[in-house]
Length: 191
Image (cartoon, rainbow, N blue to C red; front, side, top):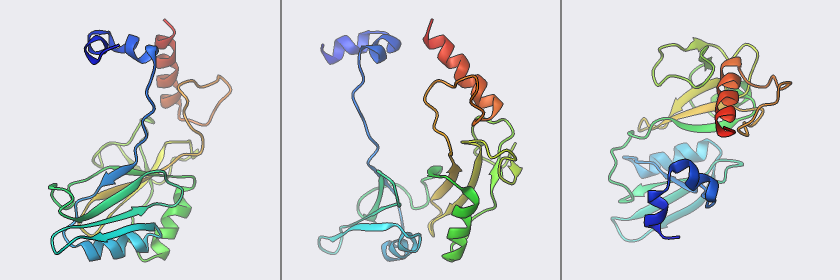
């Protein structure tokens, strides 16, 4: 099948026809001071994979968070994005409070945990969020944010059970709002 034929098919039909595996491997982070950023990501406890220098105007540094299949890259002349312009990068953790305590123990400032009582996803601003982790510690419902020295924004999100596109009637791992949303979407897929 050609690309043109795929583009002319309805999106739902294309999805059902087959999916090519895609994995997010690298996120490029724009920074103003490469060595300061290197110290910060090292202080997070992330693995340094690469520190490559090619002359005075090109440098690539790659770090990988513990347990992650995706790395971050920053350096000199690796992006034209403005330092601090990347926001909302989510790091999934199994215990939001332990993750926050770990960063604080490393001397890295992090906001207090919060949750969105809407139960689907947090808002981009403080509107609608409530201080403290989700009271029932539902999966995907608790967050805490921090920034690198340039202001690139990171969010811890507590995930204790993974969504699969279907939630069994007996599964109470997720907020009622998220459960209802996933069940409605699952029902639509079956029609």
